Length: 469
Image 1: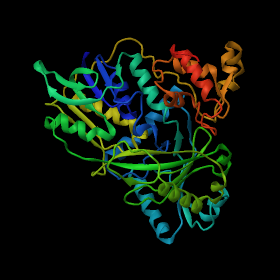
Image 2: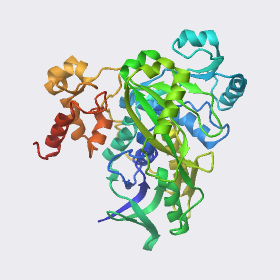
Image 3: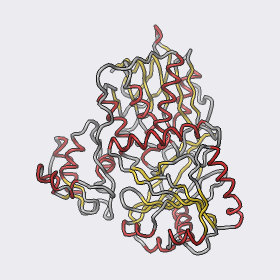
Image 4: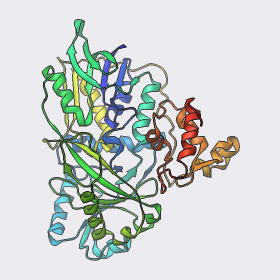
């Protein structure tokens, strides 16, 4: 199968889908490819789910600039698309005199980044706000605009908007080689046939350096940067732990990592993590006994009562860490190639800022950007997955109109048969049970599908036309 497009985007994570959404607003044919079987199956699906203000970015960096812009754009977009967001604020806590001495420098950095709402918090005020903290904290900084967000709905909303606007989505399509073709086309050899494009955008996350090498050096192993996967392990605690913490609890960062945090999630749980370990395997998302033990020790030193709560799940994500601190974003006009690589843990927050920036650079490099005519439907209304709002099982009018929304299938997460049906018939339906989890929260609760797994599988089989027995 051969596909031809004005622009091909490699990578359907949060950055690639954001770029696809931005390009879909112009009179262009666009193809979005990903080796995975769904949207956001790489770094995007396994992060700390925080919408960052960028207060602690390197001043003057591209990351800082795009985080500020992305935070503003995504805050507005989430409200329109019904993506769950809670503005809890964060507390950056100093536990030692050395960390306390670092706080004024963090305030200065935030102000250089244009974030002036940061403010000191005394030890007494800190404990009034977070009474379950381990005794001994010396001081803190409050960052009132840090928020938690649904990391699954965000890229799915971008991709849904893009596909409805005409972007062709090709999943299970890994790019294996890139070559020049006649008459100005570039040929992408993939596991599902050839894709031809006039312009190529590399948003391949953990493999962005390899794609960069293919695009720039005619198949060599490396381009302008090298990705070293940085594994971050996390622990998810039961919803009963939610009353222990009201803010995002941040450590004083080090040169390598932002450290271990404790944060509520929009789903009502509490998250502890991540670790930071550089590894060589770009697919190794296994948790380790040592990593989880280190997290539990860190959690005990911050919020001791948390360790009395049940653990719902553990998982690990890989961040696309490069040797450069800043984002590796560039556009090569003569080669008609754009690279958005080296996007670490802030990619979710900066995604719309990155997309806007990349498309502006493409336009400056010669990509014809002519707005589509007609009315702009705007962001799609996505299923709301947060705990703070009204879910379908609580919506009497919705249930009265369609009884399937009153039929709870997954009792841990209060997911109804109507929500599962809607996911299966959506613009981009799930390919497997993990995809269904990310669209509905089914199977994601305390029992991890032990009680509801068979019924969920049966509903999924009915919805996809598969066997029911």
